[in-house]
Amino acid sequence: MKIDLHTHILPREWPDLDAKYGYAGFVRLDHYKPCCARMMIGDRVFREITDNVWNPKRRIEEMDREKISMQVLSTVPVMFSYWAKPHDALDLSRRLNDHIADVVRDHPKRFAGLATIPLQDPDLAAQELERCVRKLGLRGAQIGTHVDANPHSGRIDTLNLDNASLQPVWSAAEQLNSAIFVHPWDMLGKERMPNYWLPWLVGMPAETSLAICSMIFGGVFERFPKLRVAFAHGGGAFPFTIGRIEHAFHVRPDLYDIDNPATPRSYLAHGRTPARFYVDSLVHDKEALKLLLKLFGVARVALGSDYPFPLGESHPGKLIQSLKLTAKEKTQLFSGNACDFLGINP
Ligand code: CO
Image (cartoon, rainbow, N blue to C red):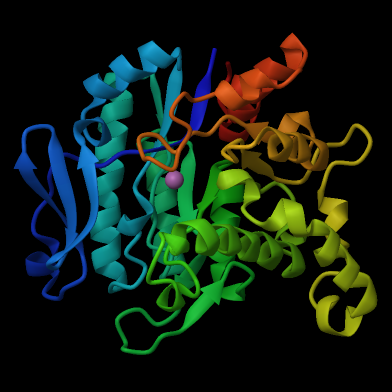
């Protein structure tokens, strides 16, 4: 059994959101030829996509070919719309979440779902999470690595995941026993990265490390001991820079040990105890995956492919398969850890 924790889906269509909400910046789909569409923001092409993004039948065909038992569906992060007015983002989130729930309901053995929530308004976000988990049967939410503080006010004000205003979201996730999958979006420094796809190559790993460090240093895991969190792309830059991060804790406690006295390494695997949080396996490098297993423990790394996008693993699970692991360890990486994270009985 293989569960792919990290896959993205969109509905085939939705209304013109710029017109509906009365301001620009939302994504629309331009189905310009059969089986292909362009994700457009205004006149700009954000991404070309194919029908496996929206067509469950096509996804299942490809899953069967790759021997993937189940995909965990989440929206494409550009749809988060944390910059929008909160009630508009809620309206859009509800539409996307209802769609994911419909797909899961039609194919309950092949798909599980994660919601998107309007994180710019933590109370609304917590309410939508509750609706999605209790009424729609989704397993939790996918959230971004940061959120806009004053959406649609003309001010750029970004909050990291340590911000106290996010407490209602963590609290709801904990109470609902739901999973939180953190995915990079709106990459920091992107204005300095006009070429070479750098926001995806440099910005995304930095975003993810920023999110992990923010949650550790801000004491989020201390305040919400039952909160289950996984980070995309193997935790981005965090695993390789943990030595530097830990060293800084000891040499500059005045800068660092402000909100949480626990050391960063205490959140990683030690002895038989696995790390405090999960990462997916999407690192495209055998040695990097071995490092993840060492740092987080075999119980905290879960297959994730970023299907169906080109930076993902085109044969999901191939990298895990290439490692020398026991059958039990492979089962953990392929499905057991995803089940634990999502709260699914295998
Ligand atoms: Co992704």
